[in-house]
Image 1 (cartoon, rainbow, N blue to C red):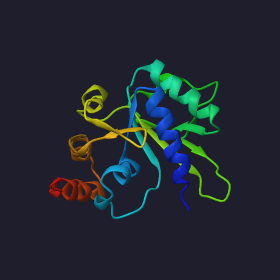
Image 2 (image 1 turned 180 degrees about the horizontal axis):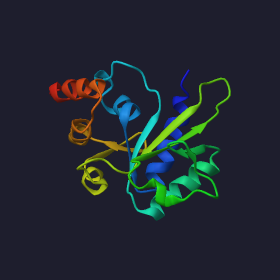
Image 3 (image 1 turned 60 degrees about the vertical axis):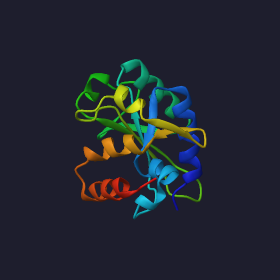
Image 4 (image 1 turned 135 degrees about the vertical axis):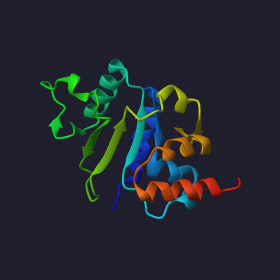
Amino acid sequence: MIPTFELIRIARQMTERFDCLLFGSLGLDMTYPEVLEEGVHDADFYADCTMDNLKAIIAYLKGEGYQLQSWQDPIDDKFDYEKMRGRFYFRAIKEVKDYQPAVVDVTYEIRDITYAELSRQTIIRDGVRVLNKEGFLKALSKAERQKHKEEWKRLHALTY
């Protein structure tokens, strides 16, 4: 079972403290749940790509008990932050008793969309800064996976 309580807790804290916003399946579940065909698996954030912001997010997640990696490289005291360029995201994983691990993905590069653009297309839902409909449509338009293309179609068809 996915520890959504942990993912929502982290989403509240991160979107309050750092230059980041929630998107992905957890964001859709909080705003347009009818668009999803599958349940929530993780928490996906889009963060401003300044190194200070990313390092602050990394330090926060480590302090919350998450293990971090950039692709296959652990993000530890020896990590070369220059490796992050062109890797688009990093992952944080935390063991949660009696649940599957909590998985947090922090994207900091999206082709043709800046953080500044998407950050203007957000709402606050349950204390979490999450994309609004237009923001989700923009982000999903860049997706390559068929599942995300289908989510774009379903979201686009919503009339409210």
